[in-house]
Image 1 (cartoon, rainbow, N blue to C red):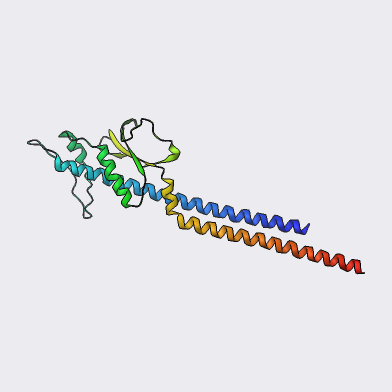
Image 2: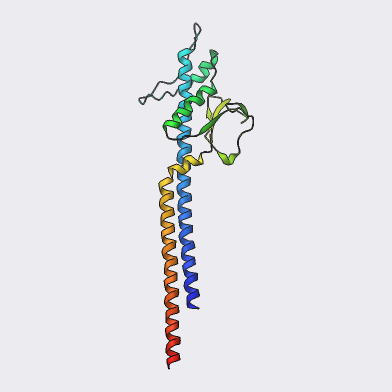
Length: 217
């Protein structure tokens, strides 16, 4: 009866340790995932601004035309509030393929090596343009979505990025944590199982001694 109780307590201990490790891993995964999404949002915004700046250098502004924007800040972040609307007025429309190329480079530099799809969304949240060759958008389980970035003040057009199969990126960032967790769990489980075997053997030896003593008496 005592041997069974020891096994039950030990199994409960193993299950508790595994559950705690899984909860810790899940929280770490959530934090890493949110970090990747936040970084992807920031880089998409920069990619859109840089594409607009490239168009600004190539556009021919008609006589009397004005291109409005907010000034560049001290960090040289090319963030222009009204630039998209001004460029559209002079016939220069945003190029999703160019934004995607710049975005891929920025992601690669940030060690987020994955494929992307960009969507142009109207005010009704309907996709009107995309960089994807096929019309079907991948399953939501295989993508992470960035926040839609509005190009115009009336929110008539927004750009959203889809990060394809981002989970390898997340797992790579968690690589050392996963490895350490696996090693610790294997070691702890091995120690507990070994302890159970030792206790079982000791109890059997004690029973054999008791049986032998009774037989001698």
